[in-house]
Amino acid sequence: MSPSPLAALFSREIRVARRLGGGGTMGVIFFLILVTIVPFAIGPDLNLLSRIGPAILWIAALLATLLGLDRLFQADHEDGSLDLMLTSDTPLELVVLVKCLAHWVVTGLPLVIAAPLFGLMLALDPQALWTVTLSLLAGTPALALLGAIGAALTVTLRRGGLLMAILILPLAIPVLIFGVSAASASTSATTPFWPPFLILCALTLATLAAAPFAVAAALRHMSE
Amino acid sequence: MLKYANPTFFLPLVAKLLPWLAGATVAAFAIGIWGAFFSAPADYQQGETVRIMYIHVPAAWLSMFCYATMTASALGTLVWRHPLADAAQKAAAPIGAAFTFVCLVTGSLWGKPMWGTWWVWDARLTSVLVLFVIYLGLIALWQTIEDPGRAARGAAILTLVGVVNLPIIKFSVDWWNTLHQPASVFRMGGPTIAPSMLWPLLVMGIAFTLLFTTLHLMATRNEILRRRLRRLAIQTATGETNAQPTHRLTMTGGAE
Image (cartoon, one colour):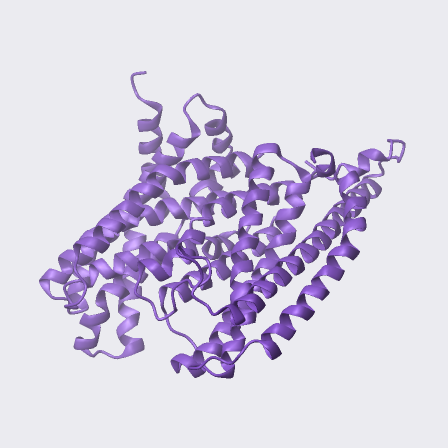
């Protein structure tokens, strides 16, 4: 097995994402717009912004993760490559994991990289920049994996995007809670950083272990 | 037992059971409501508003019990692909959503005089709200996917994923320091409620459970009939002859 099929799939996913949606740039632009809108909505008070900045960045990340998620399996379903994945020797769970990883590299990772910059615009202090970036790095993979469950459940629906958001967002609430409390640890004196951060890591690891099975089961059942 | 899992045996069984269940529900509600509103004393601190508890707490129990029922049905759908499990699963979702809604509304009405606010974002309230949204999402999923068999399997997977919320609801009052009071009936070391208040609460719990069972059986029956109608409609539309033996129509598995 010289070029591993999973590695080939990974590079295919990245290539497709880069050619179709401009890769990570689209997600980052969306992220930027969301961050830009908030000061217009709540007023340009820097003290207020720096207090709620971590929460704004997390909500923006949550919404940006939804971007393009409805096409994660749908495009493959339409052009038939999903059937190839279903019938191939490679376990579907691993295929799903690789697709999620590629999706995260294209949508989640750019957000994590851009987060310190946008944090500066929201007047976060240097320590808060670190905690936000770390918490996003630990939490966004869980968001992508949970999103994949919704994407798989709505794979055959023509306009499943809205339904997918309704299905996913309640499941993403725990990730959001611990992500935001870890991210805002430096701005509030009462919450420590490590306990919520470690719980966030645990959530990500648990979804990493469980979500591929749910996604694969959903794909098998929904696309037959 | 397994025999009754076949829709053909299930329907007559339901027809036999329903009058008894409905009667028992009415009787349990009569005793429970009398106990809750006339027999039980007012609380020394909360006054008469404590009577909201007799609706609120059973509704909260049932909102979780209903989800547990749906989870069991979801396993039946995924493991055995059983058509009755599909129907039971679909029938439970709106009932569960209704109980959760009652729980949230009564809790809100109770919270206003006691806590001074309609709503707080504490762990118990938030996790129950999430349960409500999951119910709504499941109902939306059922309505969006046209093929009943496929909808059942999709909803089953989502139900199993969402079941992590149940322990969070149950233990949220222990894990986090919440405004909502901790468990006082099902706890280690016995209930902490006075017996004069406990018995109407338990009777109301039984009444709510009977109500759920009655409604759930009725809704499951309706769902089975709806599937038969759907199958008949498809057969009529495709011009399929009715030469097949009629018992095929009773196998209500999703048209795949």
